[in-house]
Length: 231
Image (tube, rainbow, N blue to C red; front, side, top):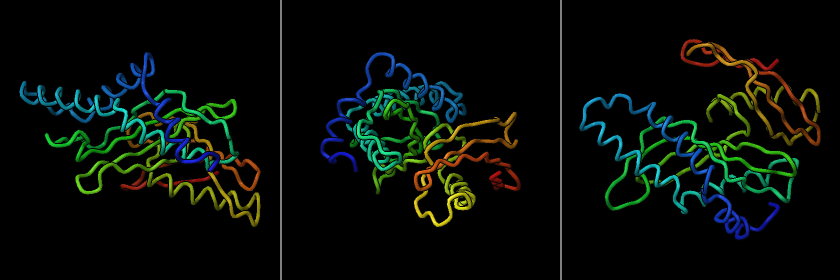
C-alpha cells in the first residue's frame, strides 16, 4: 500500500463527503436506479412506502459512515493497482448505477439489513481520472459487504468480470510469457446492446508485468449464460 491505512481513512472522510454538484449527481442517479426496481408499487399506500424507503436510502448513501466505508474500499483497491500512484485522491463524484435488490431497514438500525446495489466512485490518479466500480450487499447477519470490481464502465457484473478476466488472462500471457502479475486497469464499452439479450463489445486493458495489453471482448447472451470471446 502506498499510504498507511489510518491516513487513507482520514483522507476518505475529508474527500467523500458530498457537497454541491457531486451530491446532486448521486441523488439524481439514485432516483433513477431505485425507481427501476420499484415500479410495481402502483397503489397509493405502496407509493407512500416507496417514497419513505427512497428518502431513507438516500440519507444512508449520503451519511458519513457509509461514505467513509466506500472511500476506504476504493482507495485501498486503487493503491494496489498498477501503475502505482502515490497521489491518488477521490474527486468527490459518485454515481449509483444499479439497484438489483431493494434495501430494507428496521427501526433499531440506521444501516440497511437487506439490499444490493452498485456505485461508481471517481479517483484522480497521477493526472488521469478512473471510475472504480463497487458492488455492495447488505444483510442482517453480515452487515455491509463490498467488492471492488475492475475499473471503468463495463456492463459486466462481478461474476461475469471474473470469467472474462480469466479468459483475458490466457490471451495476455501469450503476449508476455511467464508473467505472473496481471491486473485489469481499464474497461470501456465499444458497442452497446440494442435491446435486452443482444450481444455487446468492450475494450479491456491489463497491466502485465510492466506492459499494457488491450483486447476487444465480445459478450453474447445465450441460454441463460453469456459467451465470452477475447479477440
